[in-house]
Image (cartoon, rainbow, N blue to C red; front, side, top):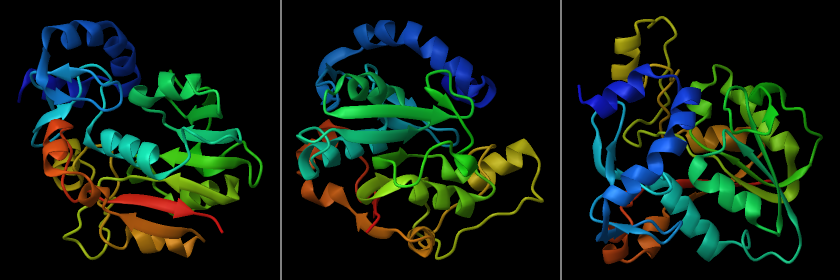
Length: 256
C-alpha cells in the first residue's frame, strides 16, 4: 500500500481536512508546470496527484484546489450551463459536506447566500444530520450533496430531506460513486470487516454500491432527474488537460 493510500485509509477525514490546508501550498508549488490545468482556479501543473481508496487513479487530485475529476466536471457544468455564477437574483445555496475546492470560492460569490452543513466536517457552518436537516421547507434555490448518500444507511430519508428543503424551481446536484455496469444498487450490512467492505463497496465506510437505479430512486422521492453526461460537450483535448473522467454522469435534480 502506498503512503498516500495508507493516509486515506487510516487518518480520520476531519483531521485530513485540517492538515490539507497546511500541506496544499507546498505540494502545489512543487508540481508547477503546464501540462494539466485545474479549471476551478486556472492553475497549471506538470502532473496531478494520484487518488483512490482502492486502485489509485493517476492525475486525479489537483494540487492547488484538491479537486477531483467529479468536482472539476461539476464546476464546468455550473459555469457553462447554469446561472449559478451569473444570477442577478441572490441564490440561497445549501452545501452538504462542503468540498474544500468550492468552499472559499462559493463563500465569496456576491450572488450567493451560501450555507454549509455536515455532521462532522470542521469546515461546515451548521452541524446537522442529513436525515433531519434543521431547515424549513422550500428554503434553498440550489442544493449540493456529493459523495454523501453512499455513507447514509437510510438514504431514502436523506433524499426526502434534500427534496423538502429545495425550493420549487430549484435544482440540486447529488453525485455518488456509481457502478453503471450494475442494474441495481447493492448493499449488505452483514459484511462488517473493514477490509472486506473496502473491497466490495470501494471504501470501508460506504454502505452500498449504487447502480443504474440510483436515478429512479431520486425520482421516487419527487425529483425530476437529468442524467447529464457533460463530458460529451467537452473537447477531447480539454478532457485530458482538465483530467476529467470520460462519460461520468452528473445527476442534476429539479423540484417542479
